[in-house]
Length: 121
Image (cartoon, rainbow, N blue to C red; front, side, top):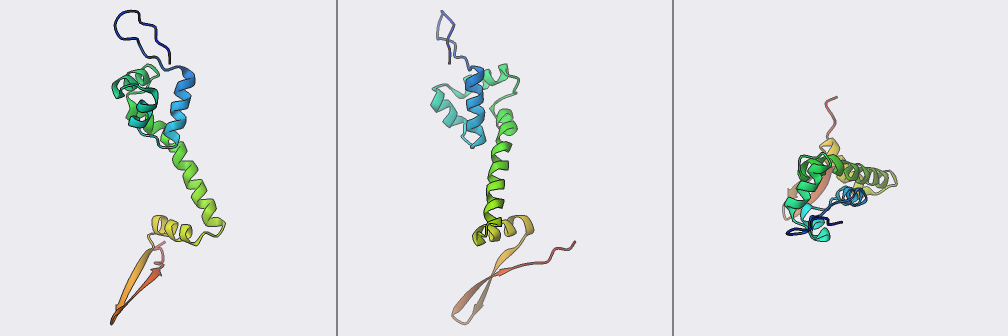
C-alpha cells in the first residue's frame, strides 16, 4: 500500500498487486474483517478503494471472486468421492440427490440407516 496525501491522514492506496492478493484471499473465503485486519484499514476504506476498481462495494467484490473458491472446493470434494471416500459420497448424496439418514426405533434400540430415494426423473 502506498500513501500520497500530505495533509491530514495519509491516503491508503491498494495497488494492482495488492488487489490480486485480496482476490486470492476472497477465493479462500477470507472475510472483509480479516482482510481489513491484515491490511490495517477500515471496511469503509476497503469499500472506497474497491469502488476505484469498478466494484460497488466489498459484497459485490466478494460475490464476483468467491465463486472460484467454491468451484475448487467442489472439485476437491468430487475427486474425494470418486477416490472412494464413503463419507464424502454420502454427504454429496444428501446435498445433491436429497438422500437422507433414516432412524428406526425398535424397543430400546435405535438403528440409523442411509435411505436412498429414487429420483422422480
